Amino acid sequence: MLRVPIHRIQPGMILARPIPHPNHPYHYLVQRDREIPMDLIPRLRQLGIIEVWVRHRDFEFLEGVIDEGLGERQRDVYLHVRRNFEAIIRNSTVELDLVGFQSSVRELFDFLKGNSGSNILLQKLDAFDDYLMSHSTNTCYLALLVGMRLERYLIDQRRFKSAKEAKDLHLLGLGCLLHDIGKMLVSKAILDKQGPLDPAETAEMRRHTVYGYEMVRNSIPASAAQIVLNHHQRWDGTGYPGRIDSQTGETVAPLAGPQIPIFSRIAIIADVYDAATTRRCYSPAKLPVHALFEMRHQCRGFFDPVVEAAFYRIVPPFPIGQIVTLSNGVRAVVVDFNPDAPLRPKVQCLYTPNGERFEHPSLEEIDLRLHEDLAIVEVDGQDVRPFTAAAESVEPEEALV
Image (cartoon, rainbow, N blue to C red; front, side):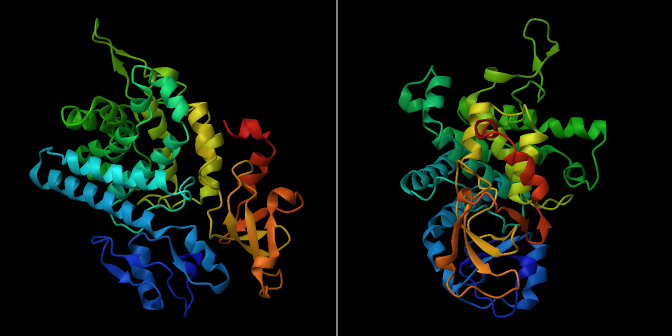
């Protein structure tokens, strides 16, 4: 099976994964193994669905890599977030189903721990209509993946906890599910504004961290509530919110470096990446390789270097199942991720430069780490060389931080 962008769907393509309805994720717009109706494409685009999985006889082995159980657990978490957020909107009160939230996070976390294929980011939740809710689910999932690679660092950074408690990620997941809950108190006109925010609007948007913290501080454990308050704190001290001096009552500088709770340091990098790779009302979704390039260069100094190093080892610039074009003109499919050389995955050749199909793609596998003369230059018609050339010129150790 292959990842196919919505605008690349062609008549006769058969779904390898069902397409969930955005309001009812266990009801499907199209079932698996059904042909995708071409007249449904505009509706899928309207709902924010970026890509679908389609059948391809030469790549069915990827079905064993992309475990459908992950999608089911992501949808469980999403539904729980949705029910709670909608109840808050209806009743204008904050009564969180804490037991339900923790249960959903625990099931997702236990699945990730028990699944050997869940050591990298495999799939986001894109097929849903409410950005805040799907973003919360995606941020939770990605933060758990990062946290799972940082057990020793968590023990070191949370010395006030026992080793077992320090590396328990359930409160990380809970805090990430609720990290943007304060946006429910921000004007929709500001949240959905197409252009840049003016200074007053920016200030109001930034208050969502404090709004959210006040909403949850008495309902959830402190380690999770701190994520809601501090998920925009940056390693270099340029984040927000500022702090209030308990003696003078004056605002002082935001948190910086190790002052920022470790769970918040994980949450910010998951939050930034998911926001960049998700379609918003005011911006299209960026390709993963584009988002990662901007995070390395435009966000330099924002992230804890240890957390950032772990992050780049689990987030593929070119997701498995994606069709790419190589510098020799061959179109190929990404079939594996090389954490030590993220921009050089394993691929299997699909079409020659002349558009002729390779008869046996499995016999045409290329590990790009071993072929310095080849590189990925295009994804879905977009030239990605501006996002890869600079990164490949960096020494491997530096690229991780």
